[in-house]
Image 1 (spheres, rainbow, N blue to C red):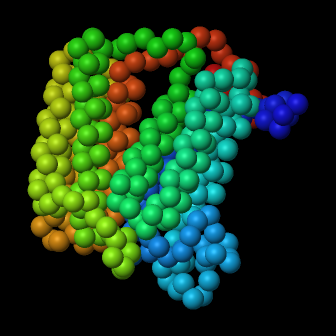
Image 2: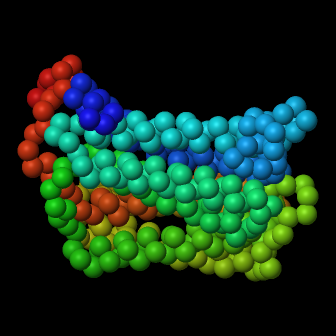
Length: 318
């Protein structure tokens, strides 16, 4: 018997515990992006000389590496916290009665994305913060946020086939919004790769693009996303979509307005580090809002009641 099956025989998580486990992975996937941004913005990207060790002779940061070494090493240590959150989600999904196999698979997808991004992070260090590998590092982190958000949503649903809650043209609009938002985020990595925050005080190569020109392209993509999000909010009202779906569209508009405001302020104030960090956090929140809105357009009813866990106050009131 493997360890997961052993735990599953002896523990049944409550629905609330399962949701919290999935949410912890979402939160940590955002935290690791923001702290990774802090590494770059403080010029600590090469605070550790190599990977997976921090120096050739030490796994840990040394006093000689100072503040930058501590920042970079601290971000690496947060990867273990992220792995713990993902592991908790996997164990909770495997231990649910009946076994949520799809949730368990989604949990393992999270784990392998984390491992792949750790390796890509090492490649980024080995290549001296190559801007293309840095961009790939961020996009892979966005993929992790996607999977953790989907997993979190699935903990609130059954395992029956998905059925639509809105007409097909509205669902197509959501796919257009998803695709355009991904282009927006990808364009943002080009802005970062061309901009002044290289991640280290040494000479770090930058992408060969005009930074202001790329920023204008990024802004155009942002306005297109805002237009699609506004159209989605209006269409959902016209088709009388469920209240929670319209709430997701409203939340997306709020996050987009805040993110756009931060983006313009940081552009005209020459990219202060705190605003850039806030913009990175906003990028994660925008993507989560878009994914949640798209997922709210369909539903998976619970086909049969699961085996209630003892002591679950929610189930005891049913």
